[in-house]
Length: 356
Image 1: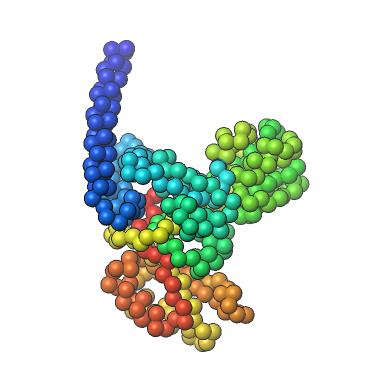
Image 2: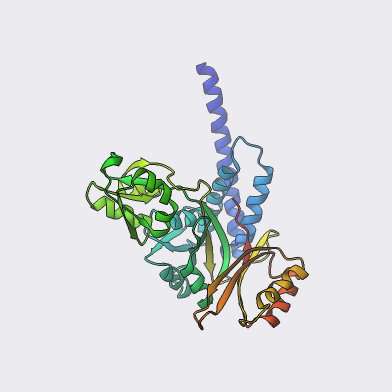
């Protein structure tokens, strides 16, 4: 048995040697490609999406597709760092799902910059303190993140990517007795996402909102033994808290979608999405008129959401996601018609659909 074990370990060592050589070859080619670029853009989300999709299609296991994408995202992240260490702003502090989304998209080699608010994430990228930003835009249970939508209307930044993060909530505390919990602290959306679980298991506990789940974990870490936070498993590790309960979200499919902010546009990847905002006068048939060009040119719409415009009473703007890239003929033709019908049209950007 020991001889067989040694044979397998020797084979693994040999493969590791080959992997090391191949990864360094890849890094060398990536650096040479970087020297040929003339626009200063290091991160190419369309190219990375193409690579990941191809590898997922080729994958025959036993590694899962998630494992394959995680490994190659790390490889690409470290190759990028040879050209420049990218900085990524996210809604902090450390331990939030925004940080998880940032790491998932850019890898561990990027410099993560935690911000106090979504506004600060936008500002950090706008003034050049960060190369990119990650902001939550919607949750599958609680809907749109209003502040992100409001800021997208105002900014000149472009959307260059999206990230989907499954949200699994953990109840964290300094002690290990659920019956001792008198107060539960979390972000407002997280409290709502765990509403039924809390009603059933902690009906007498009061609920307090915080600016983020990681901030809630920090408060519990510094507070008394009767407090608990709803946060991620990573937050438990960061703040030295015990896990009282796992996966307490009411919907096991609970997912948050994040957008990647940048100052540059993205070329087509072959499987893209475009986000935009339109407004129209409050007259009969106006909304139908806005949607007709998409149907006419065969453009699939994946999201349609209204929000008060803040320009006048009972006036609304509409946030729309459609399949396709701005450079696709079907979409460009549809938008040309839409521009003539809408009182306001703002395209936030075209970007690769999330590679899960």
